[in-house]
Image 1 (tube, rainbow, N blue to C red):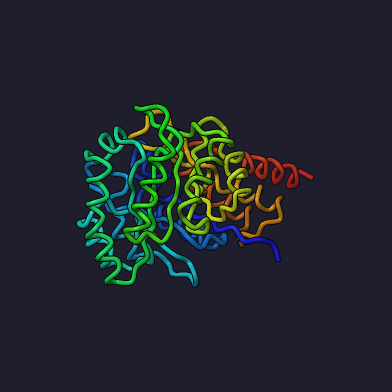
Image 2: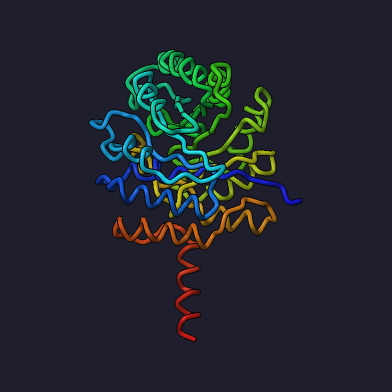
Length: 304
């Protein structure tokens, strides 16, 4: 059997949160429906952050109440604190996510507190999740560089990852928030984290700002990582990381994994159709190179 790779689709949250205007809830629902039908089994659908800070995520409660349900599809949401978690656990969700930074300055700019304070905020979140038997995923941002500090210590990445795991996070997603890393740096960072945490508890989350995302993922696959975050149509960025472009496109990632003989259970053409749907709504072309190539091939075929 081919090795299985789990793809965590973050487009409906990490992708859409950086759009200049909010996408209507009904459009977000249809996007999630198409992604689930394409074979994605882990989809981060929104967040319970302040609508004043990130208005693009307003309506996440309504979205969760209205989403179609599919067998084995996990819907997750990001929560910044106990208040967000209290809202989320009253809705039909299968996973919570919390986030911390490996950069002290980014933590202050992003959530107005230190790394230590941010981790303390998660204690009641973890208690609430454990009481409801809801798994929690932990994000670590700026693992390969910070827009304010520059280089980030690998030791800091490992320390924050270890502390999130100790709090009870089932999985740690290591994020290159500004897309500055290269394969050698990505591999070294993952190996350092894997020296203290099980490799199957680690995921990677690469933004493609400098075109290195797929190369970084390939390096981390060689190190044993089997869970990868991606975003349909390459949507995304970070409101608090100027210049950061979207995540690696799900279409491009699936195409590469298919070529490597790795199993994802995802139909790349169906994901490209979902990317076309949301890109049309946003009024711009998809950032996925694979989706663009598929569209050209479809036009050529129809012309024959």
